[in-house]
Length: 435
Ligand code: GUN
Ligand code: ZN
Image (cartoon, rainbow, N blue to C red; front, side):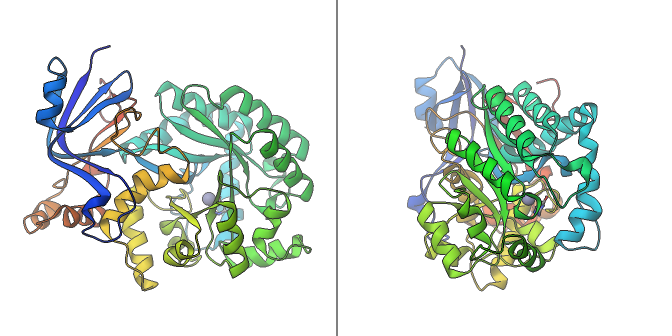
């Protein structure tokens, strides 16, 4: 198949940046090129060298824009597109008042299909090419999610939520039906094309002990799948969890008792963990997922990025739509910076861009497939315009370094800065319908 050469300023990370001027942590080409062929990156580097190797390739000139690996969002909710910006409550009331009402609509496959179109349009519009999503309790919601992702050839992770109590009847499955539906979905979707499955007990409050046993059985039978749930987001949630699971030493222990910790386990929020919980997370290689816009919006608390990392806990970053308020990973990192300011921690811009690309790919153990511009990686790319708005253009007049430019993008940009998006080598921006 013919190759396409994308020309622009290319940026790809090698490792976690230790400071705002850690040049060893990334590869940047002022006049760079990425060659895509058969959905993969066939080469990347300086335009001159790459062009010499691929003299026949068609050229798409993205200069002066930046070309990066597509963004990765490690936690969000497919059925919550119409929950974003619901006023005035904290987690448990927010779930009952808004979220559980909205998620019931996903019993209707037509609604699922319509929402799936909007969901992936919004992700791509914001430069996100891989996401890890909770679907609703309905099997049809996961089918719609994976069907639409497959149609667009996107690397997506998802799973139907398992929930069998403390929610409206219409949103409750049973331990057995949750097991059976998850099992069917894994058989249908995991490893089909670019789809991957996440076993998804929603959280301890909405799962009975019997259902968590079923989640344990699924995880043991399918070590190739992810496991995702929520952990330690809000004080009232923690108290109720400990009332429901009285033998647990702490919140994490509920999941530990059912063997749900591990390197493919993603725990959303992790805001109020004790020392024992941190140690157990670190020991098992479990991932703590930072959801800054959600944590601020729901008044849940401030994530301790440095503290968790110092204790050896793996971390990732995510939007958590619809507790989160933006699909944009740029906006998410903007809020992450502010959360960490309040914790007296400094998130440097190189680390921000590492986190939404290679960092999140590593958290998913997908760093050989996505998250970099390295040869052999899947050709999921985002093209960024640092002068997308008048305010950005004016600010860019005084920018001198790459790090400064990234910080302006993170602080000032939104979807208007996403000039283009490629998924498996194909231009996929939803606003460019004919490409
Ligand atoms: N905990 C359990 N379910 C949810 C959810 O949908 N959103 C958030 N933010 N926390 C949760
Ligand atoms: Zn969530």
